[in-house]
Length: 274
Image (cartoon, rainbow, N blue to C red):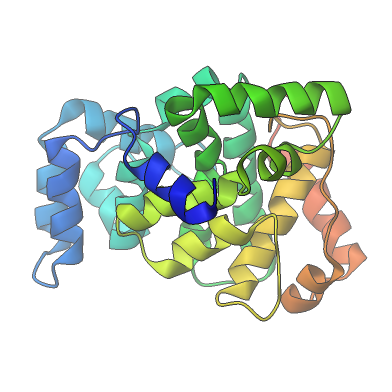
């Protein structure tokens, strides 16, 4: 099966996470230039379950707010439309993460918070958006679990027997990895390229591609979370850090040490896998 066939198979699967009507309405509002923050907040507040999920994500630590945010309209103001859109979409799949791989939610949350730590260290203006990328970076594993269970189990058997990276086993079994697969769904959900491209390329970083800085940041965050054992990414291996990623971010190994120390201070409530 080539990538085009795989993409069609994934996109046409009846098991893919679907978007409730309220989520579709929120997406339409976000994409409209006429929507105000107050209108978006009011629409979100109509659905108590969705509002609760969004507020849970907002307050889960990876945005670094000093005080809890308890009102949706405040969240919209603080985060901006694209980040809220990403959170609304995230809420459709987060419950499935630990079904696919126990510990995947903890790994995703740790990666989101580490993305925030790196973004703040770099003094980037869009740390909230970058955090959301970290939260969704392993979405493809959920999609694979939901839509291609047989292939998913083949990948897991290869990982266990050959002690290889999850993404390497995916390439052997499928000819694509979870970054690409997750990106296909996010593109279908019309998320902007600066959120999708880093997810697609986080295991295949190349400095000459679009949105290289965000991809480099996610690439680094994922590897640091794996090295420190936060949650479960599906294997026991640590991907190789591309030196060009540090060059793009203009980070030294001393910067990495500072970032890791910050992780140790900030991520104490996230489970580690021995």
